[in-house]
Image 1 (spheres, rainbow, N blue to C red):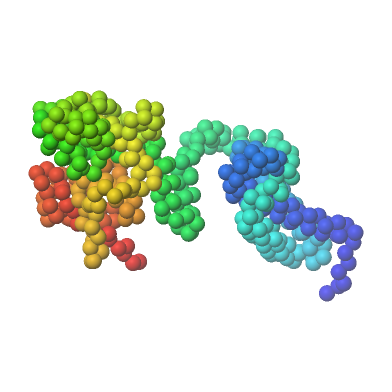
Image 2 (cartoon, rainbow, N blue to C red):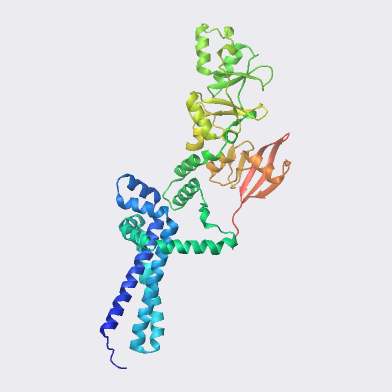
Amino acid sequence: MADIDLTPELWIAVGIVALCLLMSAFFSGSETALTAASRARMHALEMGGDARAAIVNRLLSIKERLIGAMLIGNNIVNIGASAFTTSVLVALFGDAGVIYATVGMSVLVIIFAEIMPKTVAIKSPERAALLLARPVSFFVALFGPVTLAIEWFVRVVLRPFGLRLAENQAVLSASEELRGQVDLFHREGGVVKDTRDMLGGLLDLGDLEVSDLMVHRTKMRTLNADLPPVQLVREVLASPHTRLPVWRGTPENIIGVVHAKDLLRALYAAGGDAARLEIAAVASEPWFVPDTNPVEDQLKAFLARKNHFALVVDEYGEVMGLVTLEDILEEIVGDIRDEHDLAVQGVRPQPDGAVFIEGSVPIRDLNRAMDWHLPDEEATTIAGLVIHEAQTIPEPGQAFTFHGFRFQVMRRARNRITLLRVTRLMARQA
């Protein structure tokens, strides 16, 4: 083989190839760093006065143009590097130089211009994004006209296929993206289950109505105003709740709400003689709210009225249940119990892995307690979910399989499923 003689022209070509590879690494690493950088972190830095973070946020606000500029720059330098490498190796090795150039550039581009810079960028995306913000901004501005022309051309080509990029509609809402991040961090061990549940409950408030959280009327503790005052006082003292609805004639005719503290004050004023009490005079005026009221609005109403107890009615004005401020707070922080609350959970795990569940247990509470993911869009309680899926009211002993669980009806009272045996099905091995 003849001695290789590198002329000044060939040395220049080699230098251009090295520069192109360096620029390719820059474009690849920049795209990865800026797209992977935390928007929340960048926003916080910008609020703190970091000018580079402001540039990053501006670039992320035009992400389509940012990615387009990086792709254009990357392709230009990669094609340039391949062309100059081919010319150098053909001059040195003849026709075989084409093969050498193809193999050599493939290795160099994949390792040094793609994998290596992207690996470095993804390891610390926020730091890399801040470091590269200004040069990236320059190239986005430089390739801006070309990027706009390409975007226009792509829209025109894709429009006949029903894809309208100009609409710029996000696939996920901000809350869904945040929920996905929280779930990901939980799986990776960065967020404990209680914190994940709390953040998830907070994000869910916007999707819930009062009917999803209320205590159903079949589980309400109420007072009959026609009973003797002594018996009413006894029932208030025996109740774990401080507020109790009062009805007269029929349970649907709610005439007021008695607070235990108000009752004790009235009892003290009567000299301790319960027989002298008039329950209707002690009761405050009931507050009725529609069952379709959004939970977020109800929370604001509770805070504005300084009243933590409301009766829920349907569109016909019939009482469906009650909702309290504590019910909403429990949706965020989980079950809140004090020394007077009853310990009945309605969920009893069995040694064989099955779980006995009362039909009135809310699906949301069950998912939180058992870390399950049963759907709660069509039904509020576990019994309601079984009836919805079965499209009938099952008889005791009937079993159904759906959503990865086996549901067996253990007990039924009239048209209500009162007890279920639920078994989680194991995923079949491939």
